[in-house]
Amino acid sequence: MQEPDASPVKHLADLLKRSAESSKAFKRDTVWWRGHSLAHWTLVPGVHRNGLRSNYEKNIAARFMLKAHTRHHQCPAENDYTGWLFLMQHYRLPTRLLDWTESPMVAAFFAVDDNPNGDGAIWALDPYALNANQSQKPNILIAHGSVALPIFRAPFQKKATKQSLTAAVVGREVDIRMLIQQSAFTIHGTVTPIEAISSANKFTRKFTIPATSKQLIRRQLRALGFTRHTLFPDLEHLASELAALRLPD
Image 1 (spheres, rainbow, N blue to C red):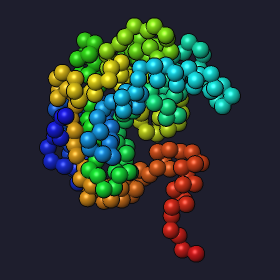
Image 2 (tube, one colour; image 1 turned 45 degrees about the horizontal axis):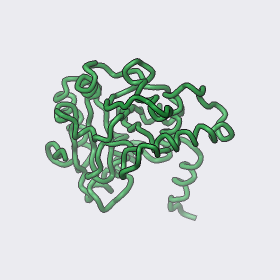
Image 3 (cartoon, one colour; image 1 turned 180 degrees about the vertical axis):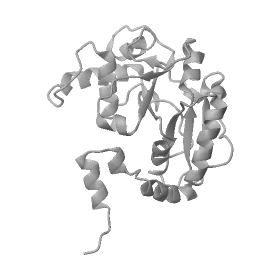
């Protein structure tokens, strides 16, 4: 397991400093971020967690496609594998996609929004260096391009060629929250966590958020407009946020 970098993030000023340090360390302005409310969680997507069998992924993907059309009126074409996988990820089906964001503040929100008694973590990723390591292509890959597409196609084919590649990809925005959260993605053809890839220290950094600092960071983020109902702009999250308020009679 990769050890955290530098000192813990105890408030947003620390995070801004770590952001600048990461850009300098990676030698680029584009850094992707991910927040974990528990620091021991690894960088592996939902379908590869908890020892799930390989047939599970194909099974739930097929069932989702069969039942989605009566519930969603703009489903992708049958052979639009990237569109289907992004749609499944959007609706929280376990997939081989892992969510990232271009905003360290958004990552911080997810790191402190849950598990108040446990240390959280924020991960920084250099997506260009990850792809250079994995595919010798030092750029962010297009989801439907020749390198990434076989990884997207695998869950939908009975005898797909096994892929061991992990890649940083850009794809179609299927919902306004992807815009607001400045979403980015890695796609994983293997169960190996990103931080366990050879030379991962060249393209990842990890910063711990102590449990005792989560409440302060939540307050700081709220003051800057980072709340659940602004990051998830739908009526369900608006109602949930309002229901939690304690307003005078």
